[in-house]
Amino acid sequence: MTQLISQRVGYRACGSARVQRDVPELPIKTQGEIESAICEFICRLQQEYMGRGPKNIRAHLIGDLLVVRLLGVLTASEQQMVKSLPTGKGRDLLKQVRIHLIESSRPLMEAMVHEVTGVKVVSLHHDISTVTGEEVVLFTLTESPEYRQPKNDRALSRVGSSSSS
Image 1 (cartoon, rainbow, N blue to C red):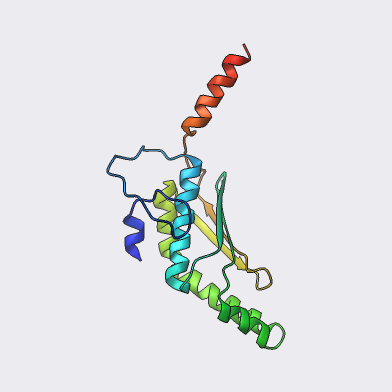
Image 2: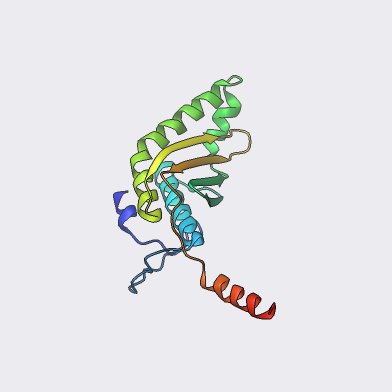
């Protein structure tokens, strides 16, 4: 698992083939590149810990907050456990297990977020819905990470500024 941190990330879809680049990366990533790298890492972490990744994953960098939203994370056995145990007991048991998994992988996740964003993590918050199968991980960072505008945005802003003259 520690090898995940040292690998370069340059992909978005969960489980997709990864392309290794020999070209030196730009020192500052775009916001989308940061969010994509976070998604891929969390997806691979889920695959390794739970045996499968989420059906969908999105990361949102909002100032000094990094929100990761995972959809379709419950395994068939977890869904069955929640349904079959008395009211509330299955939900509580599932949440306890997920909290333990998050806490055991916390140092790895914090190191990965630091590596990708260049900013240290202050705190991590987590919750999962046994009804919808949605999981949310929130990282509070020491400050807003620096990121550059994508080339397409810069080109569009130049086109927009020249046409308004």
